[in-house]
Image 1 (cartoon, helix red, strand yellow):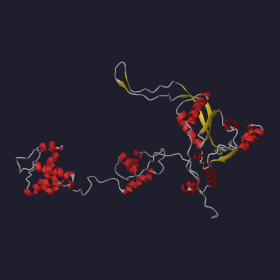
Image 2 (cartoon, helix red, strand yellow):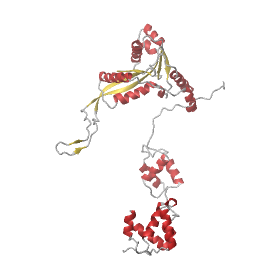
Image 3 (cartoon, helix red, strand yellow):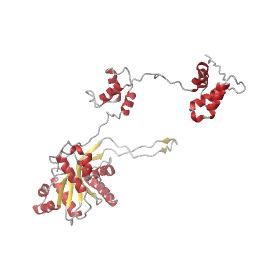
Image 4 (cartoon, one colour):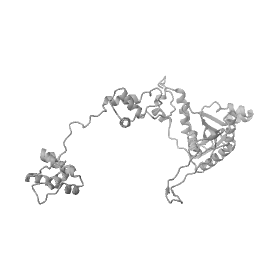
Length: 396
């Protein structure tokens, strides 16, 4: 079907107005300036300078259809309509998302998932919206955009140790540990944090395939993609072990070793080792640890003769992190660094190999003097963790 031709004959007044728009563009939109130029170039009243639709389209890098639409708008609705965008009174398609519908979707996403489902998915939410007749039809991508706008993520969850509110025991142990961390460094009374980490000893069934970079195939001379390291999903279980971590945050020192168990005897052995080998001449050792049933002087008396047990009991001063407050133990942060930097996804089959790795990591980290600069104080806790503090019985 041939394109309908629209006549554009500009009056002198209209020509002067269009020239003014093209020469004083600061007060006009780019669209108005473009349309003004189109009308000047397509003026049927000026045959000498008139251009065809295709010539104008090539000149301004637009389509011939756009040129024809401008001509049509001028011919049917006048100059102002051809220059300015017509304000749309209604949306081309009525939005399916209303405030009520959005509230229903968010409430559904935050509610328990249907029976047999672990969590809500975007497709499941879209299906439920249609089944519950919230909307006739809707795509899961629209649901995703809506949830993203409201920062709702029903498929995600976080593990977190949440202490109960108004817990005097938690507060007492927390402020005790924080007061210890606030002390100035004293080499005669070192502050040592201690923690344990269980580990499973595993061995490979098949040798790992090493990673490879981008390379050329020598036979075909075609580039082959790089490969990441591959390890077999199967493995051999070789037992378990327990990693003992001791660190002095202000001294930039740590000692880590693995033992087969973490019984009272293992705990007592490690405490004696730390005292006799690393701190034999200090006045006292302040130890911060969690309140495990083996972490007390009772273990000394079960493992050693009374004379040695009493010496260790008098040398150590115990301070315990509260239940659900393991984040207060700096040794736990050290274990986290150890897991990432030293262990990773390595499969270690025996304690001897494990201790070799641990020793290499310990030597390197101590050489670098990696310390801990603890900032969180009891004053901060009283503001940020106010809900944990019980209401005092007396004002003073």
